[in-house]
Image 1 (cartoon, rainbow, N blue to C red):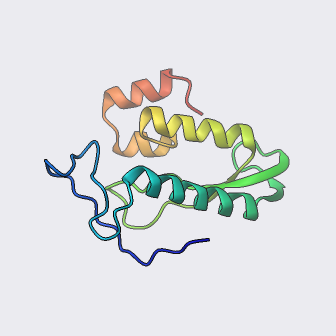
Image 2 (image 1 turned 90 degrees about the vertical axis):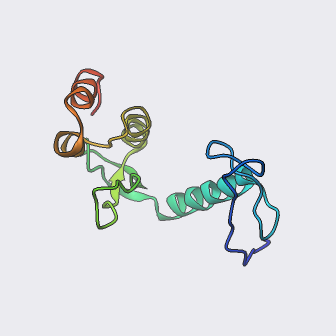
Length: 126
């Protein structure tokens, strides 16, 4: 495995890149997509190696559980807690976070707008 000691800096101002499509790293020349793929592989490896038989924190059933930690939100000072979820609940939590921007009802209730709360509640989120 090749280990890079580069602290990766991606330009986001034209003509070298943009906010939606950052340019190649100014230190090593690696593309944004390659780095994101590598970070995702590392997260998947950690998730698979820490999986264990246990009780899902959402449905309460004893199954193989995997770590789930949603993205940190601007209003939080600490990292979000790690939840241990079974495969169906892990997938549902990830899909909910991607579509609504919130992982659970408490976040959207405390920090979302009325429209976001309505979409979360009536959109079938867990």
